[in-house]
Image (tube, rainbow, N blue to C red):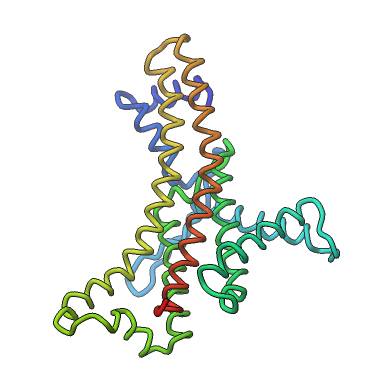
Length: 274
């Protein structure tokens, strides 16, 4: 972020320019690199449907396309011993299988769900890392995106809970059999509420962590303009760079946390007796 850009943003937004400038660059928009993205709206049975392509939607497409391209280029020619990027990708997938899926879900189901969990990990990591490139944006700093990812986790949790135990047995196991009958009116609502608090926590954790780091970076660089001092520039840039490298670590960490919690929730639903 150059000081000229910060200055122009501050002047453009007036009095509270810096704060509005930060919010502007963290929020979703219908523009990218000065180009207006397609606006798609239509009326269906009296309800306006908005399917416009926004900046964060574009980032999701980029992350998905890069993920597909990366795996296709790495594994289009089968080899006994993968090398280069293929070796790195295989190592990560094996890590997801052996250290996340199998310990939390079990041998058989864990292996079957490894492709899903690996996709979740790589997709979130791709979205996180794209946001650290200046011309791109962080899709996972949008609560709608993280909520959608958490909704997928919620659906997979309920699906495999019922698939592994049976529909009746799954809902019956929500409350442990050892709970006294007179506590059921309290425990049943709590357990049902917990089904929704888990994905809610997933969505909020990823959203908050991704938006926080970018906010700090913009705020540190904005100090150069707020203080109107060249003396503050080296300090602000140094701290911003430190936070940037911390964000690289957070990008991997949050992808890992989301994946391991997803596997844990599915495992708890599939094996309620454990």
